[in-house]
Length: 485
Image (cartoon, rainbow, N blue to C red; front, side, top):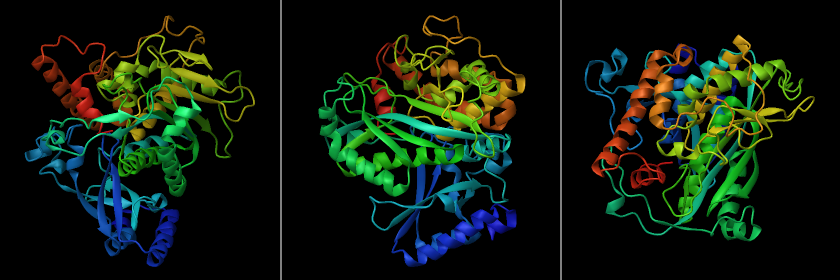
């Protein structure tokens, strides 16, 4: 069997797989979705019969095509897969080969909105048992193995809920590399009545279905709030270890979109839709390091321990190179504006919502943490979290000084964040740290993937005689991202 031959499971995983196999003999399921994260952080899946899933769970794995990792955000093929080396100079990528996906039994769920359907996250391997180079879940696991600490992560994510105004038509159908028109929607509520209970109640039937789904899936939901824009919602989740938090984010995003669509609604995690009055959405990542006994290693100082200050210093000093993992779309850079609720430079503050890093807690507070406000909701959770480890651990290794706190972060003498996807990709390309920690193979692959997306945006600007992206989101961004994320 594939798993045993290549020694892929721990004793705990074997025990979980055995227990799950016994459970499925009692469950009345028809299909199980084998899911994995593509490089954009979107969930991809194959649905298999229960007997086939039991074979995969018993250690055989299941074959999938490598193709989902070679496509940009509009399904355009980026690499010459059918040439020697797959257009990457890697013999193992020649001809768009099969991969073997191995279910992680700890992630199994029964989907509450899809009767008789199970769901499980998988890890991708080459047929010789080598972890797949471009698996973002593998990449996060490797970063976690490099540290003697446990990274705890809490999620705070914004998105938009809207009513779908029309059925899918021919204008919504695109071609590889060209998205069709984004679905037309109408807002649930007029917006800009922050935390309005009355406006929230207009969305309550959908919010209640979502809350039931999150509870059934075991997602540690803390709150659902009516945010600033029309139909803008924020969900917060309790802290978990980093891998489980990333898994939870992937499931949260795909579950939200599926539940809403079945209710005649659309949930979009696009940062700033090209619709009237839509304010930018963000994803704030709450993070702390704990020891083997669960003690918070940031909380022994005021406001942070020396270890916490060095971790913070690493995140700030590597912010430019890490930005593309937190904000990977053309559209996401529309958030980075002065005096908004998003940062525009690498600064930190204590309980300050204008800074890139908002420090919360303090001496003796077990909830002491950093809140990184850099991310957009469309980010790949594995890559966003992995980038924090790379940057923060570099800071610990060097004893990095984060400098003084900033009470006026939008005018502080701090390095500005990249202003565009192009600038962010340039910063990543030049980073020796990220090349060392993530590997040249992955970094060069990711640069090519995202530059394909960026190139299509530039072609749009040229076709429409636009000198630059302008102040407002474009039709290209709306079609590209609104329904993909």
